[in-house]
Every structure is written in C-alpha cells, then in structure tokens.
Amino acid sequence: MSNLTLALSILGGLVLAAVVGYEALMSRRNAPRQPDAVDAALADVERSMSSGDGVEPMLHVDPNQRSAHDRHEPLFDPDLPAPSGVPVATGERRGGLDPLIDVIAPVSLDGLASGDAAIAAMPPTRRAGSKPVAIEGLNEHNGQWEPPVAGQRYSAFQVGVQLANRTGALNEIEYSEFVVKAQAFADAVNGSPEFPEMLDEVARARELDQFASAHDAQLGFVLRALHAAWSPGYVQQNAARLGFVAGIIPGRMVLPTGEVGLPPILGLAFDTQAALADDPAQSAIRELSLSLDVPQVDRGEEPFRRMREAAATLAREMDGVVTDSDGQLLRDETMDVIGSDLEQLYDTLDARDLAAGSPLARRLFS
Image 1 (spheres, rainbow, N blue to C red):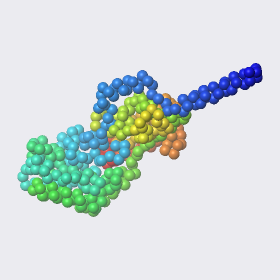
Image 2 (image 1 turned 90 degrees about the vertical axis):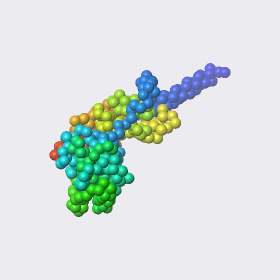
Image 3 (image 1 turned 180 degrees about the vertical axis):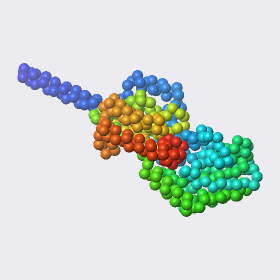
Image 4 (image 1 turned 180 degrees about the horizontal axis):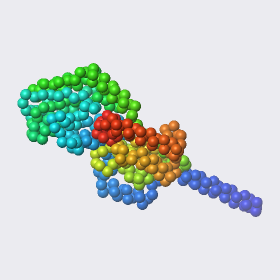
C-alpha cells in the first residue's frame, strides 16, 4: 500500500469518526432532558413509602372550602356537611345557602320532622339542569341550618338552587325542575313550601350571570423549550422543587394551599400521552402550561405573584421561555399590567361580597 493510499485511508477514518461523533453529540442534545439521578431516586423512595401522597386537592370537599382548574361541579353539594366556619346561625341565618347566589324556598312545618325522614325524602338527583339543589333543616337543638342528619329533629326546612355558575344563568326550565323537586320533598315531610316568583328569580339569575361573566378570569402561561425537549420526569422534578405535587390526572401537577380541602393555587399541565407512554423517559415535551383560576383562590395567597415567579424559575432552570397561548413572549411590563388588572378585579369582587377564594365565589365561578 502506497503512502498516499494509507494517508487517504487514515483521513477517511478520521472523517467517519468525526461524523459519528457529531451525530452522537446532536442525538444527546436533542434527546429529552432527564431528571437528576439522585433526585429521581429520592422521589421513587418517597412514592414507594407513601403511595397516597401527592394527590391533587379535591375541590369538592367542604362547602366552606370549595371546588377548580378545569370545569368542576359547583362546590354547593348537598351531600356534604354544612359549613363549619360561618357565624352561629339563628332562625334568620341561611346556613350554606345564601340569598346572594341562591333561590331559597322556605318549607314550614306543623311540628317537628326527623332527620331520617328528611334524608329519605331527598330527591335522587340534587340538581336542576346544570344547577345544584340543596336542602337544609333548622336544627331543633342548636338553631343552625344544616343538611339533614339522621337522629336530629328539625323545625323547618329550606330548599335552594344556585342562580348561576359557569354553565350560565338559571332558566325557566331549571326553575320549574327545582320547584317540582322542592314540592316533592315538602310533601314527603308534611311541609308547606313558599316559592319566590319565577320571573323575578330568573331575572336575578341573568344579572348575576352577567356580572360573573364580566369578572371571571382564568389565566394561563405557556412555557416553551428553547433547545432540547423535556422528559416528563424532568418536568416533574423541576416543578416539585417549587412545591408542585402530582395531580389526579396524568400530566397534571398542582401547587396546593396550606389548608386541606381547598382548591390548588396553581395548575401545571403537559401532554397526557407523554405521561402515559410505555417509556416516559423517551417522551419529548416541548411545552407545558401554568394556570390560575382567579376566583377560586384567596387573594391572600398571592397567586399571581407565585405564578409569575414559578414561570420565571422554570424557564430559567429548564432553558425555556414564557409566552402566551399564541406564542408571544410575556415580558415584565406585560406581567405588571396583568397584575394591576387583577388587583382591580379583586377589589370589584370584594365590593360585591364575592371575594376570590370565598365559598360563594367558588360556587359561582365553577
């Protein structure tokens, strides 16, 4: 073999090695980023030690601590206990029902009715169309309105239906369905119901729905990968460092409040299919979303500030950028404007006795 042939062979080998090395490098760069091995191992240990931890807070837990992200059933659930954090009720107190957002039909009794009889008389479905229906009794012993309890006795009842929620205002058909259910309950407990005028209540429902529609706010940021994609484990690891926990839906995490039963402060979501893949480590995620359901979260939690900080931290740590749903970068000036608008919204809700995060606001904006 001549010197020239040998040189060309060596040069060809070097070129081939360089191409292979470059392809390997680019493959590594483009592969989804994986979680740190130590943190991932610790997470696996925690999951194995406590399989019940990290469950997304349920929004339908206590009528005084209410239901969110995604469409929820309204908080007002007649199967749940009466609110415990409200002032002591009197005969005038409305218990879980409130005239501000409910149609309330009082049911008078000739004597006392047992909680067992009231429970047996409950309608099989406590909804009128898309609106929740609830029944409360005035407890003979403590004078409080509460959902009927076996073994207790009641001197009066009231049946209520919510005026509006995110499905719209109470309409004539739903009101009529409410009347039928309330009348059937009253007949079963030997009571006499008194119904408000339908047209007045429907008009009130429309006004409340107009207010709610004009003052509803559900914010969303999109975090997009600048270079390498992310694996589900990588996203979960970085979000967990900020306090997010796994949700009940694959590909969803939430930032919970410090109080059990309340809606999460923020939601984080990425492709469900990536989370359910046979080998999630090979799933490539190029964007995820951060969300805030404003009326569901107490103003004191500073949810927008925390949302903004979480987005900035994740973008920095994961090599991404924060945009709106159209892909436009969200700069600090834009964030400042959003924050200012939110403060005005909070003030308006406060003035209407529908403060963000309050039981009434959670019911109305659900």
